[in-house]
Length: 389
Ligand SMILES: Cc1cc2nc3c(=O)[nH]c(=O)nc-3n(C[C@H](O)[C@H](O)[C@H](O)COP(=O)(O)OP(=O)(O)OC[C@H]3O[C@@H](n4cnc5c(N)ncnc54)[C@H](O)[C@@H]3O)c2cc1C
Image (tube, rainbow, N blue to C red; front, side, top):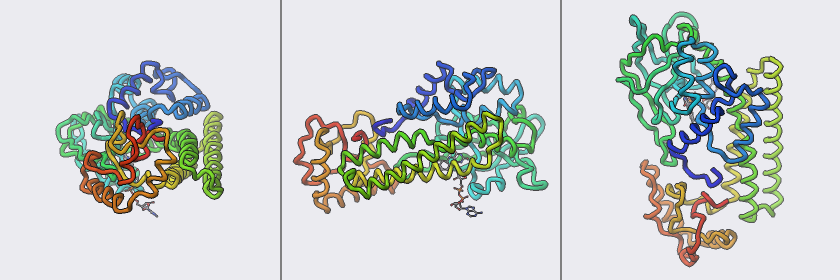
């Protein structure tokens, strides 16, 4: 994580299993369901320590999102059936809420589930399903009625993604990664026993789920870690000496500390039983803005090093042909600044392979002329920024 390396499904699941063996994958769970029974502040401290230690992120859909819904509204049978696989990290869950045209306006969703005897027949589409290509189960909001307000006709269904009629199509993003997906349901049969709670009450359960992820989603602990990384980049690349750049970092730091205070206020309100759902959106927006700001400042600080994109550079152990000598960041930056523009332009052109949705091959790329004179011996950093700070 410290080196911005890409984590595979195996990496993520290995971390989930390690936590699961310790009884910590469901770190927010009460003891009766196999969790550690920590209070809100203890949970926050656990998340903070994980972030500061640069532990991999926990894929939240199972332990943080669907598990609290099953605990609160699922039948005892559903709790026995689904919670152990989530707590151990064995079963990969996905979230099926958003649809084309039903994102912000989620209540307008159209994916339909029709009750036929002891099963539901599901037809429709979900979209933006994060890591859905690995999903074994998906919790979905589905339309079971068109009567009354749109929110009144929604149900919460647990669907086995191996069921006939389920198709997952990747949406490849700018970095060449299929981080999100479309999930299609074509006459998918779902046993009625997989309905959580009551039919047409799914909106209530969906809100419960959002309440559980609200402090988590602010991701303030990761922002604290990345803020320190930003400072390291700024110092390594020399822009730390620029007062105006330091001002930007200071402004960001003030906002990160303010967000942390807000998260702690929410947590202490939760401890005293007060409702604080209304600021869930605020936490999410503020957290996302801060993430964008530190990313932009990192790009500014790293300067020309952020220009070329080498897909393989995010793989563990990649040394590449464009390695800069590990101990010479300032010299490397100087060289890059003076590199021939046409060389960089050529590299960028080759990287336009990304737009054709094929990963850009580092092997196809040539470093700028001036870089070719840098001895690659012992090189540990890359032409991109991965592994450099
Ligand atoms: C990286 C990523 C991962 C995601 N993973 C998942 C997932 O796993 N599962 C899942 O279900 N969803 C997922 N989502 C979907 C996410 O929750 C939706 O993107 C979100 O609900 C917004 O929907 P939308 O993208 O369709 O935008 P839209 O709803 O189309 O909104 C587009 C823009 O219009 C604005 N807007 C919309 N309505 C109004 C209005 N009435 N007034 C003023 N402005 C308005 C919005 O603020 C936004 O700027 C993911 C999204 C991203 C980016």
